[in-house]
Amino acid sequence: MSLFVSALNSGSNGNCYYLGNTREAVLIDAGISCKETGKRMARLGLNIKSIKAIFISHEHSDHIKGLEVLSRKHKIPVYISPATLSSGGLKLEENLLNHFSDHESITIGDLNVTPFSKQHDAADPFSFVIKHQETCVGVMTDIGSNCNNVISYFKQCHAVFLEANYDHNMLMNGHYPAYLKKRISSDKGHLSNDQAVELFTKHRASFLSHVFLSHLSKENNDPHTAAAAFEQYRGATEIIVASRYYETPVFNITGGSTGQTSKEINLQGVQMALF
Image 1 (cartoon, rainbow, N blue to C red):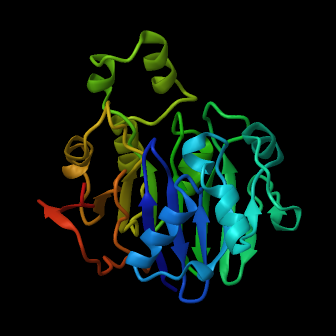
Image 2: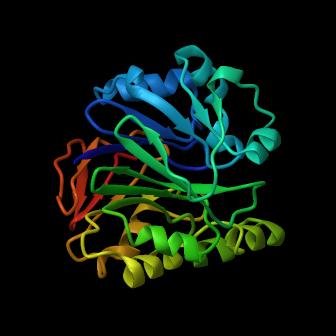
């Protein structure tokens, strides 16, 4: 019933998330190079041959820049919406190309992957939940607001990679031009720490064991700031900050289990990948 998960990289410099069981795995997004993906998986003791599919959320470069080489070199099927494929200008091998539909579950071995539409400034953006038997893990980044789809699927998760892109005060007082601040904070931009906390406090299931704070802005957020926003609300849920520089350890998600991990820093009950 376990799902083994890791953020291989999380941030505007590249996003790639590993989720699998003991036999097969999928990647959500391929925003780091093929070489770096292989290196990080090897450091974690993960075999790249276990990757049976790559699911793409949208066409922004930090989610697709390693995709073409990774798929072609390792003959990995890609699941992507037609609009995202077109907007990304991707050249993928026809025999490895697959499309998906909103809310339609796709079976990859013993894994089930369900894409769902969200609000973001992309052609056809999606997030995903991945299930193995009764265990469910979500990958919910690049979401401009806590829309009904996000809320509905968040409630199902035993663990979730959840966007906490920016701290509101840091963004508004920072050096970004006004138009970019407006874009980031819009309903089709990114989720703030406060919005992530609101989703967590209002809609988490009693069995939600892990939240991986993901896609943190380098300029407009800070790992300690993001983690501190959750500290008083987290209860028994482990809060882990995914890094833009290193892979997280592999976490064993088994329903309400706390899991066993290594290579973490524990700060007042909040676990952080090494930054």
